[in-house]
Length: 383
Length: 215
Image 1 (spheres, one colour):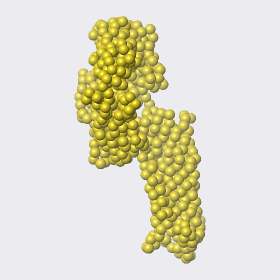
Image 2 (cartoon, one colour):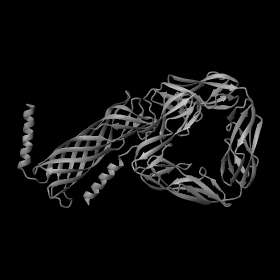
Image 3 (tube, one colour):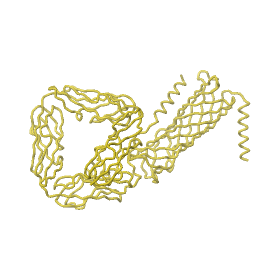
Image 4 (cartoon, one colour):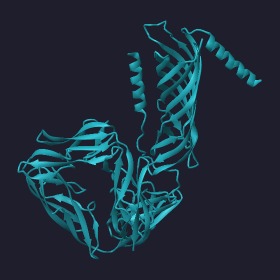
């Protein structure tokens, strides 16, 4: 008995210390050699905002979004102002028509770009969605796009003053997020610079009767992810994607976790229940899916499309597929770190994994790195 | 002179080993081998990075007491005090963007109290399992990443180990031993070259061979 206890203790000790987590720390040992400043819009209308991004090139080894790490400055503050506040770093506000430069500085390295504020005037506002139909208790994000006198357009959602004609039916906050409260109809209005636009919102009195999750079962490797989606079925037999508004829970966070948008990540081998629930008049309606986290380890990564060609200013969505030790394959686009070398050709989008946005002609090496294994392909950008 | 002394020691050990009888009592031993330090996660204000090591040396000096067969209520086993030291050179450091080269070493000096349960087969081979608890000084010696000094500091932590092994009686007093130990400490905390903290971890797989002389 003593021997068995000692033997079991030995095995548990060894197994408990055989793996490490994925690194989260950026490499600060390779010197930053240049900064590229990229604007969402090449020019901006007066009084609008434009998000600028700083992409750091670290000695040609890799590029990284350092928007939140640099110090932003605009040469002529009469034309534009740039934010260094946490959460809005690099957001440029136009103050008067003109052209000035913007700089992003990290220690002794500076990158610069141009801020062009035009004197175009707002010609119209387009609100989307136009004719939304919601069930009670559901949220809807509205967006406002301003169209200007030169035909250009910009997202002005955060500049727009939002209003609901009947706040008993639905409310809407400053960011354009509407919440339905009771059945009825209301008009959502977005106004900016004296121009307004409206959209109708119908809130139906149907109630949620069931929630279903897809996929019902999923198997992933440790540290990889799978997207669960929730669909609501209502009393009038209509269905609606309610992935973003249900409450997602994992029965064991040690095996797998799930975020507020249904994205689950495997933590350790085992099986866990992923549930999506929604409260209707005090009653909870929920569904459960089964997530199995395997002990398979990653053996290789393939990146598709291979050796693709796009034109300048076009984007290319890359997909990383991992092949694991149990011969299974899994889309790990969200799990890998995307790198491009050199970065003069373009950069990966900060919030859309695998989406490469080209900026100039050339050929760049696209790499998807995960757990020390990388997959590569070439991307050629032509004029 | 030194060589003569070495011959004298070896001769004395062999004479003791082949000419006396086994019974419960004290023993001394030496063990040496290879330590395979596990990849370690280091955490600082910028996030987690993983550090990998080359295999390195690992050695012990042991003073113990063999229960023999005089304590049937407990069973066959041993209780020992182990002084050990090990060193592993750093091989690389893995960051968000990939792995780069790293230099320096992780060094360990520790004292352990081990309890060993033994079973002797009909052929005379000894099979044993070991659990140990003790104290360790972990030293990250001149660790640098891509030539940039990173940390050069030491830290004391609680240490524990578990292992399995085999022994063969070369005589009633002289035992050849090979074994495996999984060794780990509670997480050490180091001060980096820039004065900020680095939370670290230390684990090692020890493969050892050695001799015990039972008095």
